[in-house]
Length: 156
Image 1 (spheres, rainbow, N blue to C red):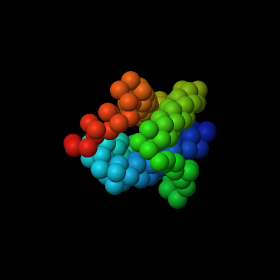
Image 2 (cartoon, rainbow, N blue to C red):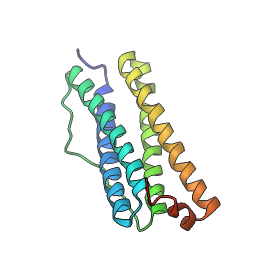
Image 3 (tube, rainbow, N blue to C red):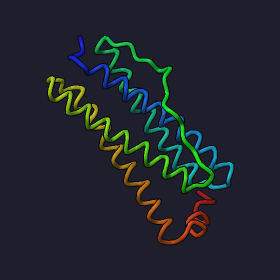
């Protein structure tokens, strides 16, 4: 099936952002593991799994639309020197993801590609949940203090 105008371009942007997110979460999970925060390592690995599922679905859909997904491109992967830095970088990435997905959904509605729109709508729900998760973690850190929060993250 041939893609409608602009759809493959949006899907490629989504692939790049989702692959970047996979690398973000893998790095951040590894850093948390190295720092001894087993619970956070597990949570970030869960995010990695979500992002892999997203990118897999988008790649499959691009192929269905007779596109050629480019999996070689990544955006910059940001980290930091503390868990709070990691969360802020991850939150920013997820917010960018939500913005891109909403733009792509609107475009798909405009060109009448409701199958792609539905796929992206499912993804944006997950991404909004990720935004909420990071906002909640950052708010908790602010309320109870970083040391108290981290003391709860040592064991799964």
